[in-house]
Amino acid sequence: MEQLSIVHGPEEPPLWSKTLRELIEEQADIYGDRTALVTPWQETRLSFRDLAENSRMLANAMVHAGLRLGDCIAVFLAGARIGCPVLPLNNAYTPAEVLRALQRSSTRLLFIASRIGPRSLAAHLQTLISPSSRMVLPELRDIVCFDIEESGTQPYIQGYGSFLASGDAAGHDSRFLDAAERIVRHSDNLSYQFTSGTSGEPKLSMLTHRGLINNARLVGDAMRLTPDDVVCCPPPLFHTFGLVLGFLNAFAHGSAIVYPSDHFHAESVIDAIVQENATALLGVPTMFVAELEACVAKQVDITTVRAGLAAGTPVSETFLSRLEERFGVKGMLIAYGMTETSPVSFMTSLDNPKHKAMNSLGRILPHVSAKVINEDGAIVPRGESGELCTSGFGLQKGYFENEAKTKEAMKRDAEGRLWMHTGDQCHLDAEGYCHISGRIKDVIIRGGENMFPLEIEERLLLHPAIAEVSVVGVADQKYGEVVGCFLKLTQGHIKPQDQALRDWVRSELSWHKAPQHVFWIGDGGVCPDFPKTASGKHQKHLMKDIAKTHLAGASSGKQMLPLYLHTIVALAIIINFSDIIIENYSHYR
Image (spheres, rainbow, N blue to C red):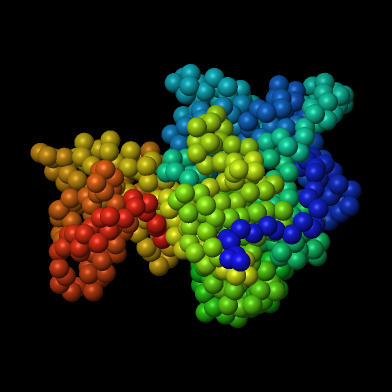
């Protein structure tokens, strides 16, 4: 009988059914004064007991500030205690992006610093307290600034010290806090995360205590973490990588975690590994490359790192050899997942044969199921490509206040089981290892960070000189992908300089969303018009090929045929095929 592409993970170990507050208290009882969290740039070292006590103090202040179950906030452990889901915000957001994020999430309480590394957030604070912003943020009750102790220096902004002290206004009576904590269930939302989902527009994924805690725990089991381990985590906390695969992973196993700096800095990572004797290192390949270079420059010998966890792109055998030589890494694990599944579904193992560890995503996690389907929704035979769908404990509750998009991405089968349609093309081999072969959607992944073409396209279209635009990911040796844009000039306008366009994008969006490569339609060998389907949709896979060929020709200095000839040939070949576009891929989105 033909083997179908459907797999079910082991049923052991049993899943935990606990809230993060319960886990916090349990770990404090077990590990007490053992180090849980280190932030060298703040010269801070907190124990498991410290995290329990500090989160309880902050949760008490939040209860007295009127926060209740379900209110969205922007601080993690304390919010979790009283059922307030946390919304981590990208620290590269512009003031306008922060404003939109708070609007979309109905955030009630925002915690923010006035500075992150060398970057001042004064403009963000001024934007948020402006009269126009207050009008569009009716739910936002308070803004608490971490590095301001006293309140009153600016309207609507409280100092962190003052906010904590407000929790003592009712003396030592903890009845309100205890009552708020008792009603929280493991099925409640723990975190909101912005995600691309299966289309090109950001949505707000709702993730539960049960999903996130168990996913973190199972990833740590695969890494074989113990209380003797020290995890070095350069990925940021605003990403599920840093929050779940980093903090919650280490916390659930009684391990210490080190965040080397408040923004990625390779030299700081090396310093943290040496000073803390880190045994595990997390990151995307672009981070590992920078860290290897920093290690060579600093002439440091590192021997303590036994395991690594990578997400973003495959890790080659050559690259793994360099990590083993410089850092002592004996095994590099690859995780695949998406935000909507809390996040990991497939993962390699330290016991996998080398060819499987290097060339696949590994096998399905315990208590998770996966299937590969064709366009009609039927499960395909093993070895045949199709769309990957996953199911299990980690599935999101849905997209916040977006029922239509939730129904598009999450569908029940004939047996009533709910599946997340990932939008990724893959195949399962005979042994159940997953191999991704493409990405059906168009999200650009730059150094492990997702960017949505639609958002950048909309910004570029506001420029008076641009009549039509299509944004694609362009292959890049350092970052995996960078932003490239194809533009059509508005008749009667002068073509703006590339840097002027980058500045135009960066005035509203994060700096890394600005196009690194700009291609003008009909200019310099670029196609005379956008390649489109019969229905008028831009064929972005062809534009990616055009960009690749154009850049290769420019770098070699060789004469090349007009690129539109290649496009015409490609169009002729594919004209009778489906409009589904399979893009270059990434193992982790």
